[in-house]
Image (cartoon, rainbow, N blue to C red; front, side, top):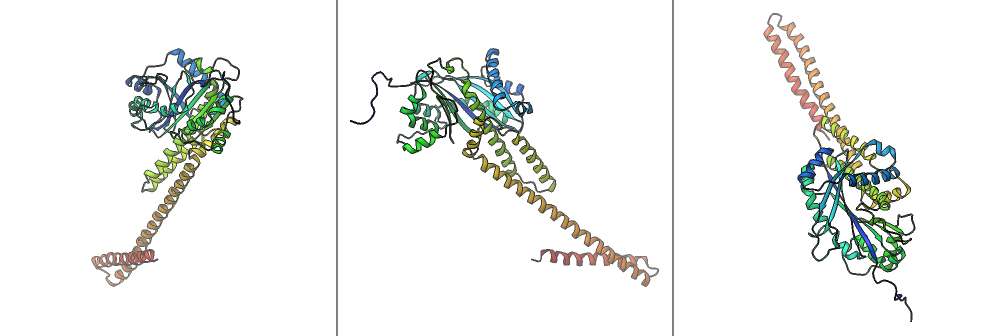
Length: 417
């Protein structure tokens, strides 16, 4: 008899703590001030964080950002962190293990691009990827992103005037309670990929597809796996040392997951900045040279800020950034923006040439007809020595007639193919 058998003492399920970071990118027309965000949060009835909660979160962020992003990036001040507050979620009917609290933070870029980051701490439960996929489905009315966004929507509208978000990306942060990571990958490899894809299908994935996805692991630590897909991200750690899981220590994201979350934030902000610039070029093309110059200057300034949003981080962050820019279409979006910018430059050059051609046209008409008028005045003065009216009539008439002839001749030459 072949095949593997399960030891009678092996547990039939794996116990884990699953938390979820929901990332929503939005676009504001300006940078949001802290006092404005605070007033909007109060109007939306979000519970403010306590001083201890804020201090614990800020200490975790500061330490990790310094390590991942470096002091030069932080001191540039392109990104501002605004703690917003906590959303209380009603328990899901028939699913008491679903998160019931959501901690909201807003990250705003100087360009106006912004990111809502919502952390939903989890509780101990069976590893169940299909259930979590259902929780993260933004199309379902009862899902976590739908319920969270319904709470954030009036806040987002009050700050930025929009009801919708641009991009949604969930990151599942899973910590096994009493098993090593190998126990999970051996028994639930297909479930891990299904959670990464947010796949609702019950059809079995091919083994080579599963292996290919799991090989794109960014985690450098034993007992951890970090994955990124087009629709979701994952950070899973096993309990290799049979220690108390860090996810149970507080309602904050696990310390080991924060570098990955920061890298995802920067990737999404990077895409949002490019999308804003692309839309600015695509939706409005001024007719005047002055308007085109102003638009080009605005986009050039925006690109300078975009370069300040790109990742210059650790080896881990570089690997995630490289794949993330490909998966999220950031490279293609940047190329499309450059093409649009070249189009604006071409339009600017063309309209400048048109203006110069028109100026040359009318200067030729004015100076040519005036010169002919002077010649006619000289002849008329010689012929009509004492009749000033006749001299003026000849002068004006010759000037107007010659101007009309020059306009007709020059226009015909310009319009001739």
